[in-house]
Image (tube, rainbow, N blue to C red; front, side):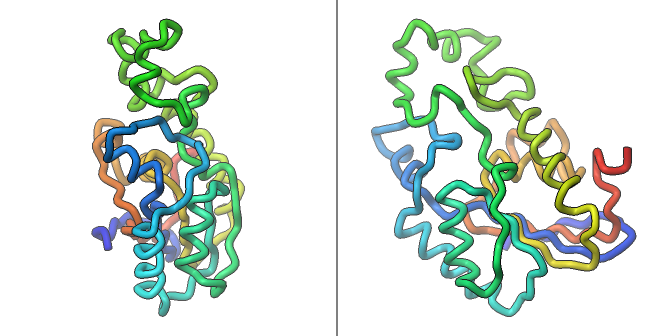
Length: 215
């Protein structure tokens, strides 16, 4: 389990941030066929299923008050294997992975050869679109857009939660943005922060004075 993070607050809360298990896209992109995923709705591999089951066993003694889950297939599957019907969970599109718009499901090498998209791969102003607060693919999102979703999620769901254990089952970029919004990591660190499959990041909060909620 990832190292526990601490922050000073008014009351007790623990948030378990859980990235889904390995997906078919994760596995495919380690091979020759590489494609953009984003919100492309892929499912878990057998390895991903087994890691979710293993994590479920590790967390079986913990009583969660709330479990929030991205409504994409890979996160729903992960939550089902972790919690095995022990805890009902709330599905939300606000916890989805960062959208890559028109790029989703498309072969990376094919996209590089298309004139209408080539600037995303050879123009310095666009080529970091996967790690940017400003640049985004056509119809997609950047990190700032994901942070806006995260902000709305916390404002809507966490206003009245106190003294609770909460699990959030989400995605790589989304969890990075949650950590940034909570003040756990900085903008300088966010693009390099490692979030492993089914390896929870546990955040202990004693006060819900979170960015964006106090003002």
